[in-house]
Image (cartoon, rainbow, N blue to C red; front, side, top):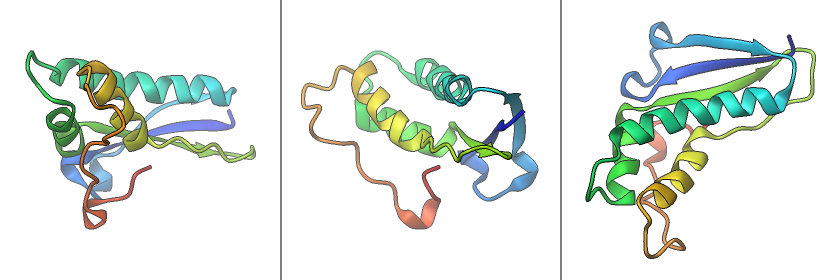
Length: 113
């Protein structure tokens, strides 16, 4: 299969022992869908009444899973779990100011995949 979804753990940044292989997919769109579902599952479980988009974002980058796609003999597919999570935090928390993004993550804390 040309697309492999791998998942890192934001809590264990740069610890490859915490990385796992989610699955292999023939279609890039299906692989992206799986990545989105992984992010959504965390955000929905962490989204409690009264939580702001910024607080939910902070929780995700601290404790959520960070899926990414490896392309094997296929065109590269870009999916950023962090970018997707930022938008989902705004939607899930009904942020009244959607043009204001959650605070940017410190680049030293890890890349957005």
